[in-house]
Length: 111
Length: 112
Image (cartoon, rainbow over all chains, first blue to last red):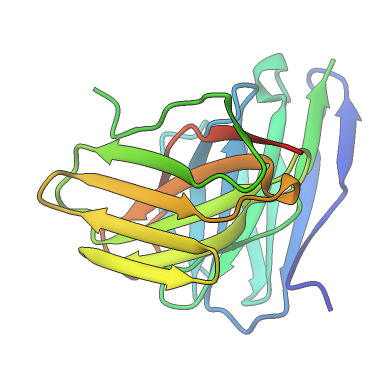
């Protein structure tokens, strides 16, 4: 009965490839987010989706595109991967915005 | 000046001690303040949530917010080795779909 789940847990790929990370929440929340945690452990918001509409895009390259097929899912597509994209990506969800619950993370390594 | 400042540590204390973790911030529009605990290679886990100024207690944990000083604290009483983790402060201006603004986290080590 995991609240926020992500797949895959680990992702190793070559530069230039395109990859996707999936996120699902079973909390009935109306807003989902993607965060990036860099090598120095700093967490930063990338996107949020509220009722299937993109609300925030924090200067993220357009190689990154969130896709939400429904309120319970928010996937992250990354095109033309670069070395600097290596990080841990966390999905989160909330109802109302303040209390956000995080998934276990996806460790992306670009070689 | 970063929006949220947090000493990265590490902070090492003996088991049973009272731990004090702190963050300062610059954006006076922040209204909601959270503390997350993150174990190594895990996702952040919400510990405490406070609206505006004041104190909130939950078991061994107490969160304090002083908006006049732009300073928030987390106190852990009777610290346990299982409390060893990175503690992240986070804040947000209001409801809706805003993203949280995080501190860089304090690495806490509780020595048995």
